[in-house]
Amino acid sequence: MREILVLRSGPLTTIQDLGRSGLAHLGVPPSGALDRPALLLGNRLVGNPNDAAVLEVTFSSFSFRALTDCVVAVTGARVQLSLDERQEAWAMPIVMRREQVLEFSLPTAGVRTYVAFNGGIEMSSDLGSRSTDLLSSLGPEPVRDGQVLALGESFGVAPLVDFAPYPEPTDQIRLNLRLGPRENYFTESALVDLATKSWQVSSMSNRIALRLEGPHLTRRDQRELKSEGIVTGSVQVPHDGLPLIFLADHPTTAGYPVIGVVGPDDVAACAQAAPGTRVSFQVIPER
Amino acid sequence: MKILPVGERALLIELEDLESVLGLYAEIEQRRKGGWHHDIVDVVPAARTILLDGISDPDAAATELTGWKRFRAFPTEGPLVELETIYDGDDLHNVAKICNLSPSELIAAHGGVTFMSAFCGFSPGFTYLSGLPDELQVPRLNNPRPSVPAGAVALADEFCAVYPRSSPGGWQIIGHTETSVWDSSKDPPTLLQPGTRVRFVRATS
Image 1 (tube, rainbow over the protein chains, first blue to last red):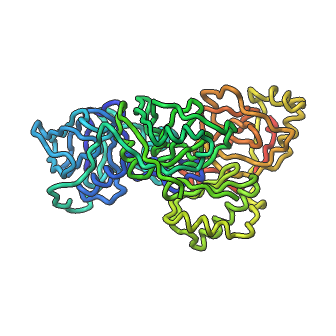
Image 2: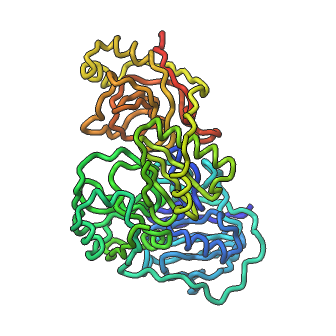
Image 3: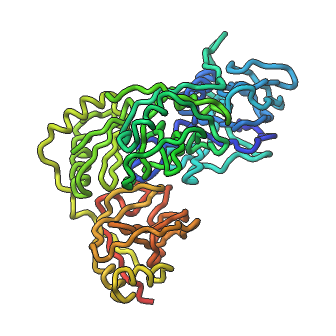
């Protein structure tokens, strides 16, 4: 039996894989790792297929003990890592022996740190995924201190790597945004503000949405919109005029107008944007 | 039909009414079985729109959609599910009052409708049942309840729904059913798949 013992899980650590795509017509959110490139890199560094389950640690220090020999990679938010008190490299395969303890600090940049194990975390799936969906309460409960997690059989030899490129989270992000589908619901000045002003990430942000504080975007059309399907990366503007960007656990339909949509790479940047991060939009006109 | 852009890989199709939505949805699903834009990940119908997500060439799909002349009619002969219902909801009297009916007249009218499962949204398995006659249509509550129990039978606007799981909710509750309509360990997880006909039968206990 390959296992690890979680010693310190922090306020929110969840199990994540690529999520539950293709079930939106049943009202099931996509879920999955918020920073998808970090999940993919972690899995690749330990020789896993892309969809192996990993840990997503939310803005916290973390530690665990290996109860088996295993290979581990830590990606996503930048952290200081140590293995039995000796420093180890971030975003690189780390060989752990049974009974060794790996720990890391609070991130120095970014929000979500991913821990991938060779063989992946073994967990029964809910609607085809092991991801915890915090909006819909699907998938496993968040990970607790003292929890033992089972790992699958290793998928073979992890690749030899000297360096793995990965974008460093920064204290300001500029997101490519395509206008639509509901930009017509907003005033001209709101559209100018969207392209020229900046917002700050609110501490109310979570896996459902990145919430922003700053200029209010004013509506021209006050008509109620009937709920309609939305995609990850949709920038929705509720009644208070403060935009929010929908992330992986977003509801499948929503009733406030979506002024534009940010691209998949930018969604990963949103997942790593800490409260206080400056956010601005590079507006791309409609196709 | 109006087609609106949604990011790099999605489209939102806006239609006149729910019937057109369901007709076009059936058409899209039929054509997808024949390989139409096989890379589409999600097709999400709603009250007046259909979202297509995960298309590598949304412009081509948009052009093709506008060329379709006639849509399939939404299948109206789907399987029939009867839900035994106890009409004891907190909003039963309020709804009856808005509709100018006595509670027992409301119960009889609601039980006389054959609903059609139209689409899901809001939360997993939350199914919008269409077919509610005009005289039974009521607005949402001004203040949504923080928690509505699973099985609550509720009305809002042109729809009826059964809360699949306990969740917050702003629909007016007229009763409840003991039948579970959502089980994520089953395939499909919902008892009320779009296309299913649904009748509410007053419990005789």
